[in-house]
Image (cartoon, rainbow, N blue to C red; front, side):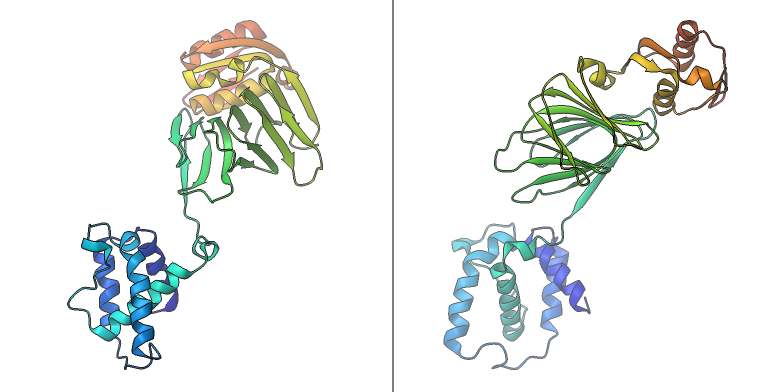
Length: 318
């Protein structure tokens, strides 16, 4: 801890209760090596005593988890008095610092899924996110005071804990999706033609930075946004058709074979090449649950009137 940045980071961890005992002692020993003379810390003894009493009432609960009598912050006995005074002053400045300054360094976590993998993530507020295959979410370990905000790449189903004072926002691409407490599905893969938002319960607001339009979606509403043109379409749907993937079930209704194959690629971890361009645009209906790739392709080929070949992780369709 030889520079200001490292020292500041250590104090922030200490203040947020993230420092372990070894880090606390290391920080204290750093102060013990300082050669400071009296008079450079406080202007007089009265000022020193008043500030020390004020700081001692608050430091213990924030810095050390072990109980202490009378809630007094105990300076280690081996720490010299002058260095201990410096510790109190700097720690006190952190305590008195505005909350906005203390929260500048937001700590984020990530959850990632591979092809064919699903994962459930529970956030700090109790909200639950089911992450579909080949997806990623980025979220803060502790939400801000006025907003809960996470970032999504891929597909996820959200079950949001209600908090009227703290809206929940999902940022995906150029879209902002905001709710208070509801459940909804978002599918946004860069390789897909559209971004799809389907509401299961509650109300969802969707808006973009480039548009003044806000879409308010209620249960059973699908908003589909073309990623190239920005054109939007709204439809009334059965939300179960878009959320059944959580149970290992895929439902395709009036879906192009091209879109179906892209979903199968992520679902089974394969690469599918469609040789016939006209076949890509053909629309079919299909429902499958926990079937292997060969069985799904066999059903697709029967309904879509095409041939296919599987070789390792490569599929050819014509």
